Image (tube, rainbow, N blue to C red; front, top):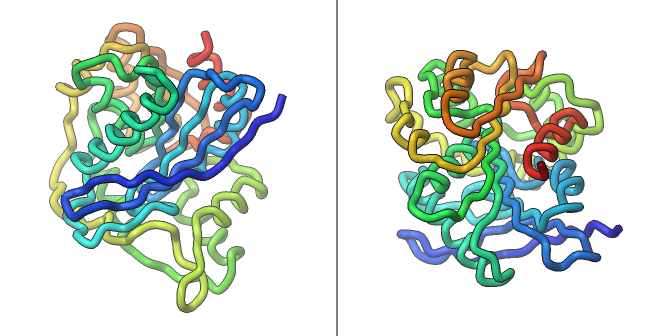
Length: 287
């Protein structure tokens, strides 16, 4: 079995014109007709977070890992006010339309971490059956203001690093909640989470994505969206998460065909790099 991966680009129509979106594709070269799976990253992250998960799941799926606009290798926007879920939903709808036409399918499964999970929840709640199974990684219908305020404290900053080792130390500090990653995994996040800039290395996202946080003054309640989701759902929670509270996660089990798994010693959010986390996702999707 040979798992192949490659980067692709797609022109996305936005209110400020055409912007280019990058996405990684992973698939088994022996099986061209595989079901589609999208893996969508968190607020400041990018597609390469899913390398370990995608390589494993490509045994069963054609795995697509996009860079949301403003992150990774996708274009940044000229108007920061456009960064937000209406744009992200429109971006993913265009990507899905392209992929469905290209591969002759009408639905996909979805793994979303934090922001990527909310995008998946909103798509799954929309009319139609484009989402078959949904994995919500450390996110749910109620998001506490305190967690958003914490994220807002660092997301708008634009630190510079002399070398990738310095960037890794920064990530280890601000992302301690990712849990006990190996040295190799931290190095992977640092290498793929930075890019060259004028005076060294910068993080691979537009700091302006933080502008919308100023408008948030309280908890975010998406219960109406969650109620409209009808596909099977796996909720993954870091047992120490401040964004997906324990009571919120457990209340989600009242929803039809929803499972919950928690990982100890991890906050927001599990990175889906560890073997037990990958196995949990794989078992749910391929059951």
